[in-house]
Amino acid sequence: MTPRKVLFWMHLIAGCTGGIVILLMSLTGALLGYKKQILRASNRSFEIAAPSPGARRLPMEELLARVQVSRNQMPSAITVRSEAASPVAVDFGRDATVFVDPYSGNVLGQQSPRLQAFFTQVEDLHRWLAVSEENRETGRAITGACTLGFVFLTLTGPWLWWPKEWTWTNLKKRSVLRGGRWGRALHWNWHHALGIWSVAPLFLIALTGVIMSYTWANNLLYTLTGNTPPAPISQLRVEGPARAANRDPYKGGQHAAQKRFEGLGDLLARAEQQVAGWRTIGVRLPRGPMEKVTFSIDTGDGGRPDLRSQVTLDAKTGTVVSLETFSGYNRGRQLRMWARFTHTGEVLGVAGQTIATLATVAACLLMITGITLTIYRFASPKSGPSSSETKD
Figure 1 (tube, helix red, strand yellow):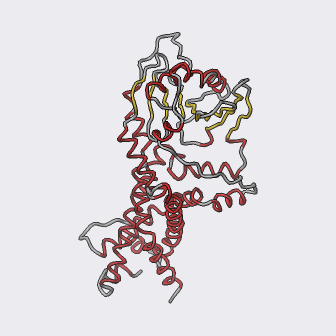
Figure 2: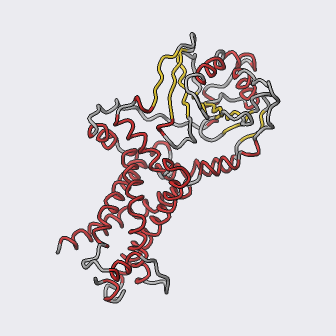
């Protein structure tokens, strides 16, 4: 067994072991590629008419009270955009987002329940195979291990398709997609060509997936940059809106609901003053008494961590407890934040999302052709591509 053959069999075993799960994660990753744009396009019907000059927004407390009473549920978060014609988005858990006119307080409607449920289900499949909550850790362990295996595949793949003799003819055989009859030779060509063109983005997608999947990988990122890893944070249970509403329903009608968030409007206005040129401000609403409120402020389109800030205010006095900007974080945390948006390609905007989506589609075909080539190898080891297709 030569080193190349040993590497080949390790590559084949890794692909066959995690191939189905990697295929599923690649497919769901491709489906999530333009999630932000799709949801934004579906919400255009909720945009309001340009307000008249001097029009004033309702106090945030009143706005939240109205939408809370209308749904008989406690909201979990809000997002405010700087555009005058943009509604306020009010979240109820992961599965429901309601849009409200910030000037009249009228509830404009709910984000498409079917579309939101579809993306939630796809995300659950991508992260933990959509298993039940009690088996979620097992699902995470499987997807994490397969992501780690995918890193190995992206590292060993180039060694296997690299021609022994570097000539244009040999390179062309591997790098140019060819058509023809559906068979072993076609699968061999596609497996090599798609691997060559997609290996770089797939390596980054898989590597950042490992960082997000494993605590040791996350901590290693901090250690390599000379920073102390953050203290471990317990996994928070993500609850649907119905369960959250049953646990903590509103009581006492609109007046009581309005009193619950008393002072939030002033805190929001205070947060707006801390970051010039803000485009969106989001805040997770506390279920208990407000003591400190943290606002996430973005001056970009949501895909650049270096354009994000966090402002924490004292709920009673409105004083700034902390103002965290990207430049103020240590190098380890900065890289960790970049990893999250590199995984989806959002760091490069729509172009990056397109590259990531095309790469994940290629990954689907790589898994399919890899599995079929393995079947061909064991089902009919003597048949297959001619020597001119496999030899350099």
